[in-house]
Length: 161
Image 1: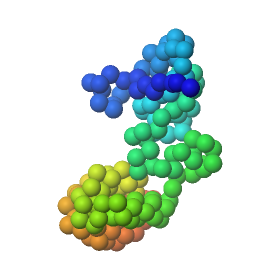
Image 2: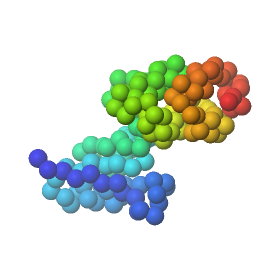
Image 3: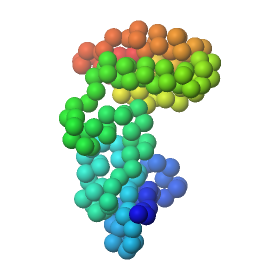
Image 4: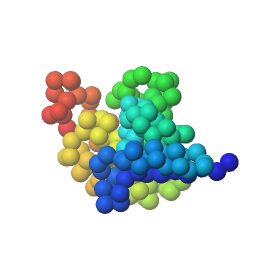
């Protein structure tokens, strides 16, 4: 079976702004193959809205799942809550271990710098933590930065890190 995946945003939007779901709905109605939607799908609510507005056969979770593998479970209704601090750190540790397996420690240290922003955002971390991770000389130093921080109290979450 054939199908097509579309990201209904103009290239000049650079992954910002609202996808054109009216355009997508028109394509769903015109094309003789299933249409899959991508773009702007960061939450289960956004996925549901895309289905309702477009009539697409499915979704492609791309950037919305970076640093957020829990989104798949949420969309499928297998998980209602967001991950807690420890769950996020456990997942990032797993990602680090797999990167070392595949790339070796030196190369993984550089490669993982693009992953940290996705997880630091989920952890409620600051730009200072992000900058420290981006310049960490080793994975051990990055892990110390990540694990040396306690879960912020709700009242202090915005000021933490």
